[in-house]
Every structure is written in C-alpha cells, then in structure tokens.
Image 1 (tube, rainbow, N blue to C red):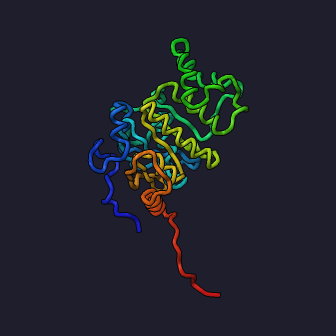
Image 2 (image 1 turned 90 degrees about the vertical axis):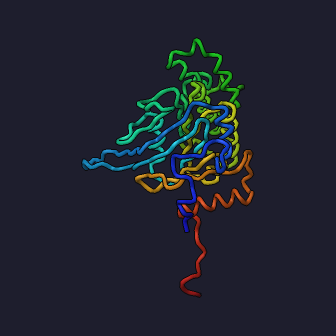
Image 3 (image 1 turned 180 degrees about the vertical axis):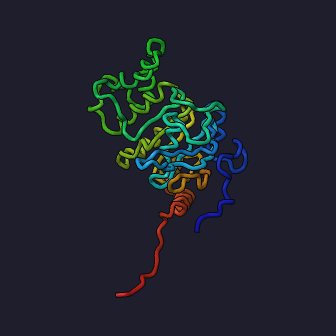
Length: 292
C-alpha cells in the first residue's frame, strides 16, 4: 500500500528552516545560502511528434526549492526528470507555467545555473586545466579570474592533474573535472543529470561524498536526477518522486537524517523501502499458484 498523500508536506511548500519536520540540513544550508531559490509553478512541457501531435513530457509541476537545499528527482524512465532539469537550466522553455530563480523568470541559459551531465563531455584536445577554464574564457572572464582554475581543481581533488588530457583520467576523475568546469562559474544552482550513473559502485559512493563536501563548501543549491534510491536517500534534504510520463510530482519526501549518514541504519532502510513501494518496485512474496 502506498503511504497516504496527506501524511507528507504538499509539493512546493517546504517547512521553514528549524521548524518541526524541516529536512535535515536545511537550516544549515539556509544559514549559508540566501540566493539560489527555485520556484516551479504549474510547469508543463510538450514536444512535437512527426505525426503533427504534441507529446506531453511534464504536466502541472509545482515545486519550491530553498536556497542551499539538496533535492533529488526520482521516478520511472521517461517521466520528465531530465526535461525538468533542462527547464531549470534554461536550455528549454516550458510550454505552460513558469520557473523562477530568486523570483526572476528563467528565460535562457546563464552561468548562475551550472549543469553536469551523466557523461563528462570534456574536450579531448584540451588538458584538464583548459577544460575547466573553458567557461571563464567563453564569458571573457579568464584574465580576471584565472586564479580560480587551480582553486577548483584542488576543490575536486585534481590539483596534480591540470596538465594531463582527458584520456589519461579514470571515469571518476573525468567527472570531477566536469564538476570543476561547472563550479568555476560560481553558480547559484548546480544541476546534476545522473552524473554518477556510469561509475562503478565504489567510485560512485566516493563521488557522492565528494558532492556533499563540495556542496558544503560552496553553499549552493543542488538539484540532481537519479534512478538510484539509495543515492537519493544518502544525498538529499528532500526527495521528489515523479509519476510516469507525463511527469507530475507525486510526493515530496523529507529525509530526516543528520549528515553524515550511514546506509545500513534501520531508518535509512525503511525510507528506502518506502520510496521503492511508491515506485512499485518493492516486490512481493506470494504463494505460488500451483505446487510441484
């Protein structure tokens, strides 16, 4: 059975920092970040089909993300999670509704919103230092801010690897470089589209800790798409569970555990099981219909 919807805070209305039921970490995040709040109001998105019809990807999404909060989006494949991330990034426009950053409409891409993809997409002809500096150069800021390059390489643990080329790096190291490239623009919001999906299990867990460390140091809002329920519980202040397409917000679940989190404590496992149940992946043990 699914949990009663009334037992959860309504989408888009997180409790204030420090209030009873406020997600763990929100008070600390709010204390260190006053910008980077996202408001999504009745956002829908459709794409044209070759037969002339419109295919809905998102329908009536309402959500509010507090400055400095860590949100994960989880749901079935094709439910519009990455589409929603692209709308926040300004790479696509909502068909109806709107998205605001600190009360201002998002109308296109901007350095205040960084985006990290599942694949690092590093330029193979540039060394890691130049890959990370690419955004500064594209914005005409390299001369004034070139000192940020070694700082952000150190931040992601690549201080000794600035002169090497992407083909020399492991998958985890390449994803660190991709993070540095997004962070060097000092965005208010970092959007993460399954950035750890291609990594092995041990590297993935290590990178989860690195992302939390970076978020703590940079004090920025993070919105992450994942298919991994354990990852969502481990990282998030709140988990947004979406329905099958067209995607809607089904439930918004606070994660009430302090950090650092242990993955094997009963509360962690119970919340994991609850989310799997909402997603209809909990599994059931049934008596066979016949016996041999």
